[in-house]
Image (cartoon, one colour):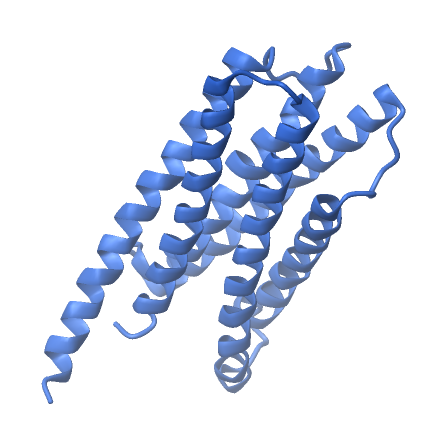
Length: 224
């Protein structure tokens, strides 16, 4: 059995999956910006217009949070850098994504206050906040286990499979949160134009394919 040849093939497939993930990830960012800026009045956290405040939520929860989390997951295995640099970039991108995610969640709560809507009543909100909290715990777990100098190599080896498994599960939970959020927003809009409806659908499809491609990249990268 030619293990080196198999490893080369897997590495090539992992790199291809990474490129596909970048394509769909950036495509989703562009589609979301077109939707929010062209059809939905723009994005502004401090606005007196509640719709502009609400638009901050999907923008930051995907473009700021989910997109960066996906990039962080791929960076750990695909970035051409030393292992230590890969770990630092991996953790740093996650941290930036979490900070932007906090702002995005605050925007949703601010919108609810402005229009007198109860918080945490939809399935989207339950899945989304649970995913965000668990990913914050995952980040703390990774920081203390893999970045802290006092952590032993044995501990890192034992915990790595659980860290990877948890990250992949949370990625899909984030995708589900994003898609249910888009469905909820489309329902709120009611009789939106056919063009806007298609744009929302294509945005959701791009987000889904981004998540699947990230997972393929991470899964294949572990065997290279």
